[in-house]
Length: 383
Image 1 (cartoon, rainbow, N blue to C red):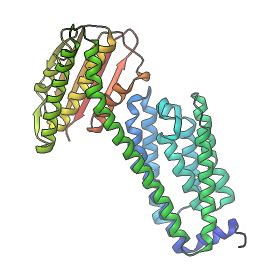
Image 2 (tube, rainbow, N blue to C red; image 1 turned 180 degrees about the horizontal axis):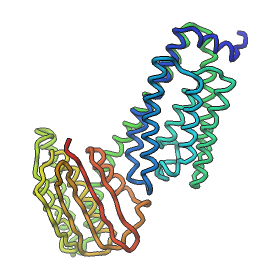
Image 3 (cartoon, rainbow, N blue to C red; image 1 turned 120 degrees about the vertical axis):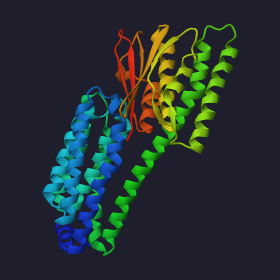
Image 4 (cartoon, rainbow, N blue to C red; image 1 turned 60 degrees about the vertical axis):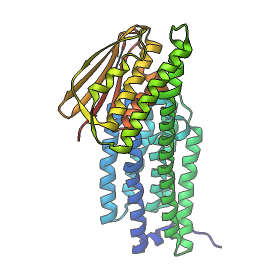
């Protein structure tokens, strides 16, 4: 068979068509960071104590990705670019605790881990394997150290990144054995990107189904059992009937005219009676028209917010305020209950509130502290 050295790979990369193919592979791989990684990162911003660092990191990542891609297409992939790419990813990994919610770090499901995976592979496309391989191993080392700083073990993720770096380097060496090797590398890298995209879509689909289950039967059953009603079956039927009416109306609107404008200020009052008489809800509602799908998201998120007041706040009053300031529509749900640490939100607030609004193109912010009540701000902006 014969041995193949770093010089063999360098000779291959000096062939112009191959060098062009490798450069465009690297540009496509980096471009996937914006297509896959950035949207994933935005979903977790609401769960961070200081989202400003994550926003700054995403701005730097997006700017660098644009510059990286432009240089690759015009001049080709340079080794200094791979080194700078590894340095940036290593910094992100080292400060992963500031960029990713703590619960997303284990298992390698965070956007930083995805970026690290793309980086160690792309680094090998520049050639110079004697340098690129050890340099790219800085990324898993930084991920291990950054995770350890927040008390999370990343040994498995570190091992996977090392294997990916070595596998990508081995692929570059094997590429010298056949004229079709470059196409195989491209196919392999593209397949990995597709797997990342499919995995993200599958996770979002699963989260959507869990939101439906949580917002409907689970919440209804929990509330009915907590109501001080001598006939809990009647309470269960009452809440189930309300859920069914809302679900039927939302489904019909989605089928007929999902973008038809509806009055949100006429939707929200129906939430006030769901927990009566144990919870009194006062409302201050300005007229506001939004698409039917957006109205459904606001309604679901506000309903879950009130359910959390009923179940956890320990008070008998809550307030809902709807304002429409130009293109910005805002719904605020407030209580003066026992409060909690927003960093320890459960599935209800994380998915049924924040996830529902994010999926609809809006946002949710949770402000609370033990003993200081809770304010949940839901927002959506007209285009």
